[in-house]
Length: 108
Image (cartoon, rainbow, N blue to C red; front, side):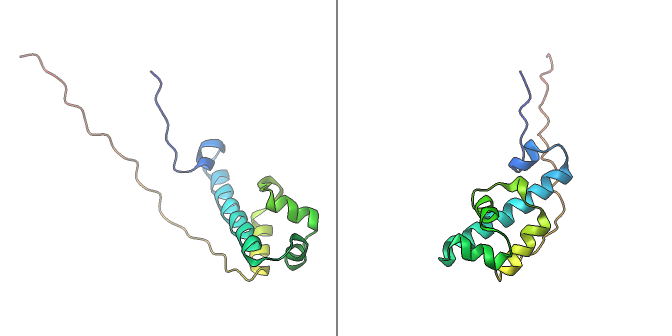
């Protein structure tokens, strides 16, 4: 029987290092926020691209979720240009859950 691994986030499962996973989580959060802002604002992708200081094809990449094409810095800059207030939260990792020790049956 194989031991099942559990991850707190998809990035923890697919990235090679905790550092890469943390970067991808932050980039993902920013990208989702920017996509939501564009949709809710009712502006065109072309107008959003102008506000963000990027080209329309790059804006299309953002809306299609092509996360590997965007750095954390670029996404932070776009969020700020949109009038959003991105911030970073740092928290201690949770301690791993401990399994209750199983009582071993002892012969009588």
